[in-house]
Length: 240
Ligand SMILES: Nc1ncnc2c1ncn2[C@@H]1O[C@H](COP(=O)(O)OP(=O)(O)OP(=O)(O)O)[C@@H](O)[C@H]1O
Ligand SMILES: [Mg+2]
Image (cartoon, rainbow, N blue to C red):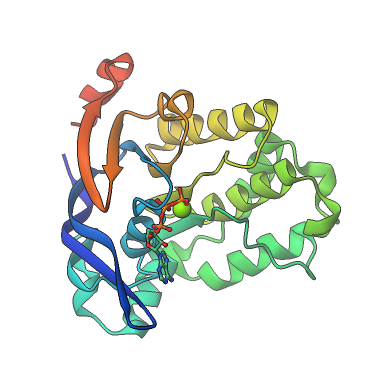
């Protein structure tokens, strides 16, 4: 068993004017390679903050984040950006696609940014991913010419194209109807099972969290509950 991502006593305080807003109040979390973890909890409890810190987009006020053996809290911004490029695929709560680029250009940009890693261009995967996500005939559309579901699937394609060690997904089904949600969830499950892709997914919905191996529940900046999903007990044996 290898720990691919670890948070040690993470705290984050945002300063808004003269007021301190504590978003994380001491979070400890270990994520195993190949694990599919869901993070749940009410709005404002710190889920996105945690995900952004785990992925090196935000720095914690105190505590440490260890990505694949490397303590990213103790390195420069430049080095952290590099680790992020190499190891992390983000799917954001809002899709964060480039509106002036077509779908294909959005994917190509991501590939250029990540290229060089493992000598792997991701090209061989593109067709397979587009097929799975039903995006093949949308490649010349710009994000605003796509439905919400298509944009979210494109954001997912972009995150997984370069085979990151860890996919961090912030409510990837939050804005989708049930059909699109099912497609995205099926894709994440398949990715996890087929490629042992490590995934951390935030969600509000119990049914969505049910696809994960393990569910952690947050409240007021803390993890208050951790449960294994025994539906996948045999699958987990291969990981744990
Ligand atoms: N950039 C920021 N500046 C100030 N306060 C912030 C900032 N980002 C988040 N917060 C505050 O930190 C707390 C946690 O926010 P966070 O976005 O992590 O919540 P969340 O659990 O993801 O909520 P949601 O389910 O609504 O997305 C909230 O009180 C929020 O207002
Ligand atoms: Mg959030």
